[in-house]
Image (cartoon, rainbow, N blue to C red; front, side, top):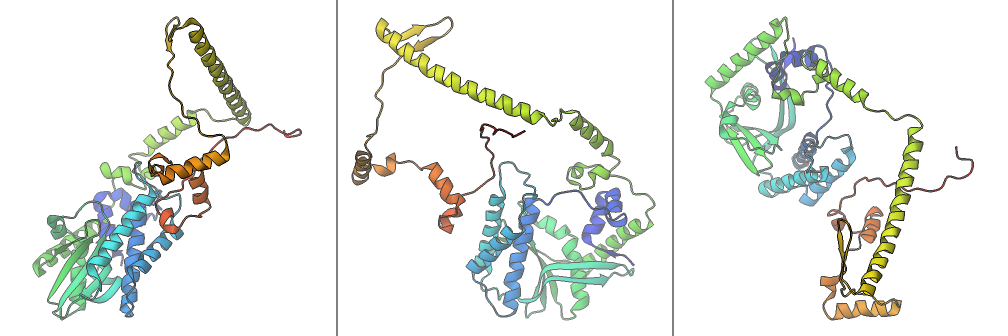
Length: 395
């Protein structure tokens, strides 16, 4: 008999065709891992380590835990991970996850409020119709009063309200599993750790509610098992679906988009040569124009001096010539360094000095700064083009 889960029947409720592709045809969704999902996984792994070590009477320090988090982030991160929000970077999300862990650690240390029964607990339970249900609990715990806790970590940017918690199916189904497994149970508390807000949301279900919930779940399972057709269901969620390229509701649209892309000019083998030649020509012309601009500027200044004017008129524009005081630093190296020392000793250096970008860039690339400085900096890939003459024989 097939095993069902909250995510599996949710897929059917959302779109029967998506369910068919994923769970019957075993198609793989074509969708990159998002940075939100990546960050959530790393936070889960870090908290899993915290409680796994605690199980063996080892309390991990916050610094060690954060190092573990940063290490697995660096190890697992790749440029394929999708960052949808253009104003944010992967580093923003890394820092967010770090803050979640710090807040959680400070809030729950020394982590002995409850007896931890399981971390990332997985099991199966049999529903009243014989169907199998997959159980997966982030953190499972109890106290000495017969209260059991089904706990879920959430890194969502939105806060879960009480109504949502009281209607939640996923954790509520796990209540049935707890009551079947543990006969001393007085209550099962469903707890969502909303890490972005450092808050808990707690909900419970009565036996009557759980009985009704199980009936509703079995009803959906029956619909799935008796389904002969799996129609598409077009909603706003389709934009996030990994099967869009296989969906009859969108397949033709995607084909047209591909054709439109193919109609765009493709580079031929010799287009690179043309691009380099044109780039070189433009660069040379820019240099010529810059030189000509400097020469014209000098001529205009001399013309104005000879004529005794400070505005020179052209056909459509006029040029104003204004005299101003321009600072010139000592050319002698010894005098230059003396000036720097005087600025420092007279208390002007901080307000007059500037960061030397090339020097900081070089030290950052070579990782010569202390780690606490490197943490505030970010290296990203960029490209530059430099021209040089071809050597004889280069074809």
